[in-house]
Length: 333
Ligand code: UDP
Image 1 (cartoon, rainbow, N blue to C red):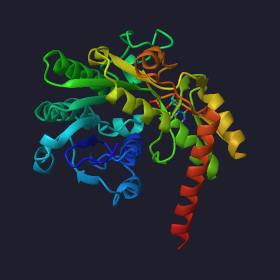
Image 2: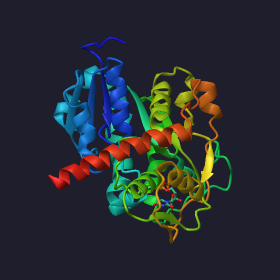
Image 3: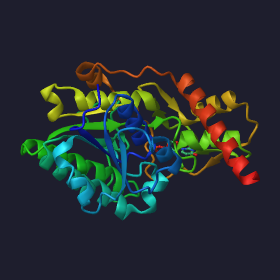
């Protein structure tokens, strides 16, 4: 679509991992994008890839605080609001749990109010964590989840559940047209090397001289979606017109499930590392298994992931190899 002076897309969390890929895709499509980010977990280099691109504007802002005048003054031009603003890796979101909860609840409220004022469509990126440690497998959207509201993950999963509740209330009150994505584990280039997630940890360990860390016995499962597929799903969800989407969340993820040990084996094989594999304690409340049922996304959005784990891991390993080589050059200089 051609860039139009009058239409602006706001992406909160646009300098983060998925957010920066989403912003790049929207700019590729000729959209004008206003990116909000507090740079808490974003990589500055993600932002540098976007800065200077036609149609891109960045405002450093924490959505826990009321939106600044520079943003609200643009409300008449904003047609879409994507909320991807929240630390998503367990060590990161647990480092400041109060801020995580407030980002999800107060931050989402600020963005919903903006969407209401602007008459814009609002998309919340919720999470597979709303299913907690699931008793139902694979997870369909109508499964209500098994979460703990007193554990170390609750700032994130209960925060996202509250954000969903608020978002669906805005829809019921006719205050905004909404979409809710439940994102499952996603990986790819531009992940933060230090964010503590399994894919980035294993690859960075394999490419340097650090031991490969498996938490627990590695029999827990996850299903990993490559980031380009995720971005495609998010844009389809935002733009799809089916009225059912105003009342229902949609799972986005890759349904190919594997154990963490299996994932480690693949990374070891792909990189040829001889690093030692070490088993560390399983974090508290770590879900035992997770796999999305993506029937709803397939039916309502015509979406299924197309990038295989093999292909995605190859691309991610290649990207991390370049990043780590650049870091070494900087250190050596
Ligand atoms: N994990 C692991 N080694 C690591 C990091 C994570 O074995 O170095 C495990 C973690 O305990 C979990 C799975 O890998 O069972 C996925 O963890 P991640 O933090 O990537 O995502 P989430 O737990 O939010 O699904």
